[in-house]
Length: 240
Image (cartoon, rainbow, N blue to C red):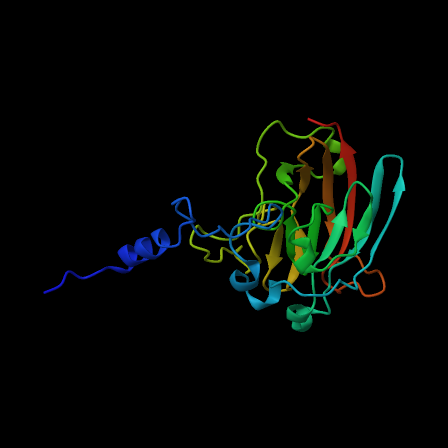
């Protein structure tokens, strides 16, 4: 019986037969590498429908003003209401510029221009599984923004809502796991979301830091029970 040629051996024979006139072996070209391409698991396939990337820019407004060193105001992360959340994107915020970043969920994946993303009760930071911005976040136990005058020396993490084999990891209420952790308490009798007494310190790759605090999940004075209309405040901290 003739010896069997394996696929690997056959490939070697074919490659060897494709050499140039000088007898040099020619190997197939490797596919081009996109240096700025996101790595890791694809959120479009990992995240549940309420949080999957949407190819549109959020209509939610970031309405803030600054007094002294503190920026405060509202962020509309209502995303069309709970029932319409699967068809609406996150709203993105640049804490240094004090403004909304007009970007879609798809483009935000490879953008370094935003710090935080909000949608309903889901909060994310631009690093780890959420983006390429290399932001990390530390949670500080503090009831007021004034209590935090510098960022902690350690304890910074990035978003991590996937396992090594690309399985989804969620907070207890179903939002993608993020560096914010379980940032609120929920009353299952009144269905009220109450932010914990915490301040969140965002650290960037260049060492700059911002302290961010959520005052209330219900910041719409015209509709006090409208959820995901955040009243927030933040300020810049000394760099590390």
